[in-house]
Image (cartoon, rainbow, N blue to C red; front, top):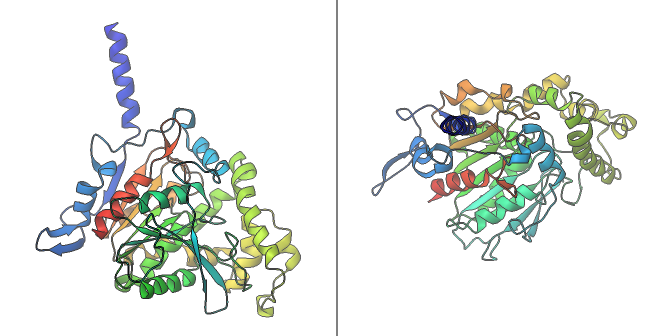
Length: 395
């Protein structure tokens, strides 16, 4: 009996150790300053992580134990993808929509939500969270709605605006120019608009998957001029070439779950845009575009030509946020899973997180791609660390 007890103890300890969160940053001595006040003194990113983000750094709490029947990254990803539209008590919200027209005539939408019902209001000084989904995603995804409700009902009482890319979430398509993996212009225009309309509010950015790449690239491009107080990137691909290779690999996940889900959304948007006149200089082959069955084909036949890139490799290089991580000047937290088959960990620039004092990386052993499901019934783990981080920054 004693032997069995010891085996059980050490077995559980080994399992829990395999679920521990690992946070990488430049360290306490060189950590970037977040703020300095008379009451608090100097507060650094390291302080925020180790005092306020207990779900990431507290030895007793910094675990992401996967739901027993979703113990692998593959299962986590499949479950999250297939149940992306579900509604439950954690995500039962209704948005107020705002449409923004870009300088080229394209349209994006902002879906606003807050517990007080104030939505976008320049007289309100409560903080604002701008959330951006991944490719083919929108404000209607379960993890987006659940995070939105949690932030809005938190102690910080965020007003949340979910950024819907061109053609997503039934946003009117008014320009033939689509969004792509590195297209930051629309988000930049949106940040300026939200800042101008809400001059008393602190604004944070949160991105998922491709949206995380766009957000990360944007804050790197902005550098010291970035208007956001902080940013969080979940499952950021960083290196688009690595992520694209993983996405276009022929396997069960890609062939039957991820590619059909993403391509279905993108192709519907393309058909909705068929009435628009495209620029003849793009030299698009409409038959090739409408016949595409995988994301790589759309990138080659449409994104590369519209963006004026030499080939798909140049498109990946220019779109990758990894080239801008060194220039990030605002507090930045990345959350990535080590068993993510869509944005594999080999694309994460680990060395940059060890040198830039403004950024930190939370590595989660089990979470898949946008899964991070724990408990029974499954609950989304990353909502808590995101809320902890952004709330601590804007306080």
